[in-house]
View (cartoon, rainbow, N blue to C red):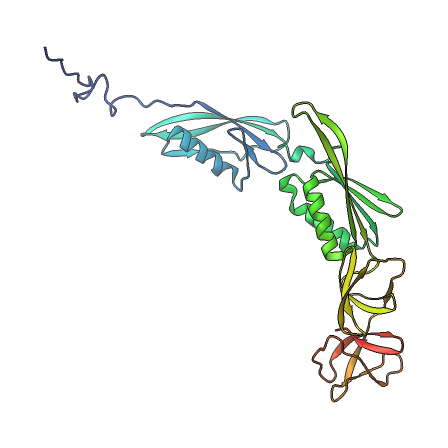
Length: 317
């Protein structure tokens, strides 16, 4: 016995019940719950924080994709990004020509990274000692500012007689920053960790990091006297690496702050460049022979920088 064919009761096309074209459009979701960070504007969706340059556009894309709509309109102009704010906004969607309203429940809070700011939380202490110039401090502050979106903050600054301590929220960043400070300004770097607490969930100790950078009284491109050698500094770590201006050879000597003397650089001009180099002496204003250890190409009347040591002049740049 043949089965009877079924037809759409509305249009008569073969179908069990209403066909796809005649069946009413159904909405597969009625509301969304979205958290927004008041500090960095990231939003939390599907168990993850997402960075955004346009919150409205991103949420509209999520609704459009989830509801399979042809059009989605969302107005978040009245949403105030202050922690604790909860607001429900109606999103208008169009699915197969039918219009629907979807509720979007916004909760303004702080993401895990931003919640660390202005708190007692810290993972590492950057300890700067020695000659701390404005350039060094600016270097630290600019590096932190560039990494705020990654949860890097200075939650405490402790000014001491011999230096300054920065309490940072990320120990890996602190360690990398210390290395960059040493590379740019020289100095000795030491790292030590200490047990802070015990994590019962992971059964592991939680460590905090202390990173010490002892900055020298001189920096890269300065001229110093050490062990009766006149050196122009190229880098400083555990060793002072530079050019011996007397022998024109590269040297690497042990870092010794106590026995290091900074040599004052002076500006003058070239008087003669052949067959020997002569410059105007910055004190006597007389033509004076000068050593050219860096073998610079010089022109008459060219402005240069020199140092004077043991009654000799040395051209630096």
